[in-house]
Amino acid sequence: MTRARVFMSGRSQAIRLPARFRMSSKDVTIEPIGRGLWVQPEPDEDTDLGAWLSQFYAEHEPLPDTFLADRCDTRPQERDWS
Image (tube, rainbow, N blue to C red; front, side, top):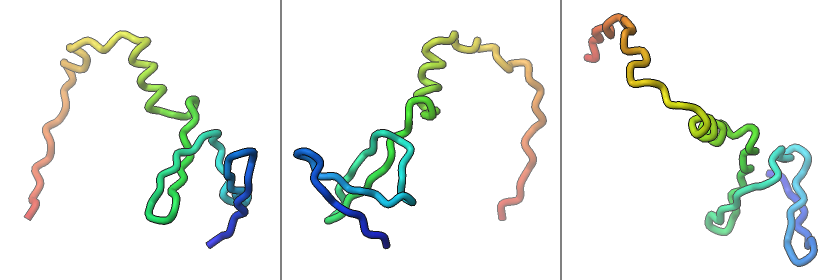
């Protein structure tokens, strides 16, 4: 367990995190859990794979329905699940 200092920054309350808890993101999400808080860093836009994929699919044509249609895969192996 590590202690951190709570202080006022203008009209807001802030927490000074020790260096070992430093976050690379500029924003966090905070969720109250009981009497505590759950703090998670928000992913940066340039490292957020979900945002990148959404932008990619919005900017590119979808693959045709025949994509990989002529692919010759081997049948799945039979398994004894008993």
